[in-house]
Length: 81
Image 1 (cartoon, one colour):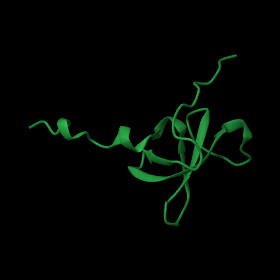
Image 2 (cartoon, helix red, strand yellow; image 1 turned 180 degrees about the vertical axis):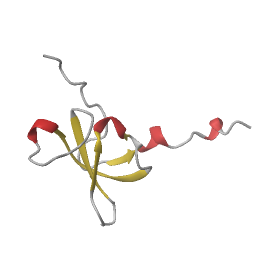
Image 3 (cartoon, one colour; image 1 turned 135 degrees about the vertical axis):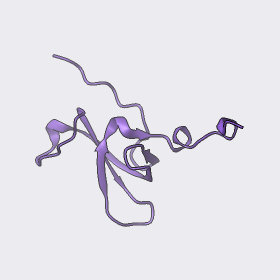
Image 4 (cartoon, helix red, strand yellow; image 1 turned 90 degrees about the horizontal axis):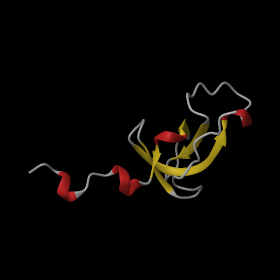
């Protein structure tokens, strides 16, 4: 049996960047797909649930898309100039 890759990203309650959508949100949970009772249609073994910081529609993404915000933003010295 293959062990899933451990999740090492932001933790619930922390700001997170979803690389699939380019959105920032607050991570609510990371769940194994076997824990879900609906058709998730995600390719990875772990699903991340996020919500907008100031309210709005929650969304889910493959946990491999979830990054710390500072990892997702371009660094000042990477502008290519």
